[in-house]
Image (cartoon, rainbow, N blue to C red; front, side, top):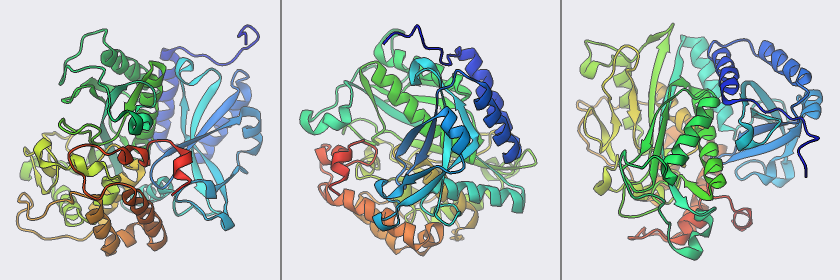
Length: 476
C-alpha cells in the first residue's frame, strides 16, 4: 500500500530525545498526576498525525503485553478500558475475568518511527481490579504504591539502575526454534570490548543505543561482553518505577532491533553452557532531599549504616527471595561458581562471587549492587523485593557480612522450596499472589529435566516464560 496518502507522525531522533527527556524530568519532579494527564490528553487531541497509542503492561512473571488503541477512542475512553484478565497467565480466573486498564500518564514515550512504526506513542498501563483498587497481581502497581509510601512517609526516593546483559544470535526467533535446531549460532566471537565497527554485533549495539537515547534513556556506555555475541548497554539512574519501565523498554528495543536485522536478542540467563551467562546487576540507592543516604565518607567501604543494614536484610532473606531474582530453570545454570557466579550470600567490594557488591562510589554514585539477578526476571518484582526487603526485612545481626556461610540455590526446586516456606515472601506478596507465582514456576520446572546437566535442554527454552509461545502456554 502506498504511503503517499498517509500523514502519520514521524519525528527525528533529536526531536524524540527532547520530548522524552522533558517527560522524564516531569516524572522525576513528581508533577501532579492530574496536570500530566491534562497535558497528555491535550497533546493527543491536538496532534492529528498520531493514529494509535500503544499501552504496555506486564503480567506476574514480567512478560510484556501491548495493546494498540485508536488515538481518538483512547482520548474518549481512557478511563473505561477493560480486558480479559483470564487470558493473562497469573491474573484472574475465567469466572472473574474482567479487569480495567488504567493509564499512567507520567510514563509516556515518543518512539522512533523506523523501529515501532509511524504515528504511534507509548504509555504504561496500570491494572485495576473490579472494585477500583490496584490489582494485587500487578507487581508494577505494588512497586509504585510502595515507592510512593516511602516518599510520603520518610521522604525517601528509591533509585535504581540495571546493567542488563544479553546475547545476539543468528536468525529470527532463535529461542523458539531451539528445540528443533539444538543450538544457538553466534554472530560474533570477539569477546569483551571487541567487535569491528561494521560487524552485526556492533551494528546492533549502535542502533539499539541510538533508539534508547532517542527515548530518553541517557545512555552511558555500551560494549560487547565477555561471552561471544554477548552485549551490554548501560544507561543512567532513575526513580524506581521509571527504572523498571526502562528495563522492559530496553528488552523490547533490543528484540525489535535484532528482529529488523534478521537476528534474535536473547535474555536467557545461560543460553550456552561453557561461557559466561547473562546477568542483570541491580544498582540501588536511596536519596532524601537530593542527598544520597547510602554515602558516608567515614563509613566502612564509604557507605552508611543505612546502606549496611539494607545489605544485611537482603542477605538475611537471600534464599527467600532467590526465586524472584532468578525466575526460570535456566537461571540456575548462571549460578555456576565456575563462571563468576554471584551465589555466595555475602557482601564484598571486590569478590564478584558475592551476592552483593559494594562498588567504588562518591557522594553522587554511592550504591549497593545486587548481582544475583537474572535478566529474565520480572523487573518490577526484582526492584520491589530488593527495596522492601532492604528497608523492612529482618536483620541477621551477623558479625561479618563479608563471609559466606550460606549459598544461593543451584536449582529451581530448592529455590521454590525456600520461597514457599518463607514467611517473608508472604508479607511481600500476600498469600494469594505468592501461591500463583509459585504455581507458575512449578509448572515450568516440572516440564524440564530435574537435573540441569551439561547442556541446555530444549524445554528450558521451549517453556521459558520470556519466550513467546501461546500455543505451548495454553497446555500448562
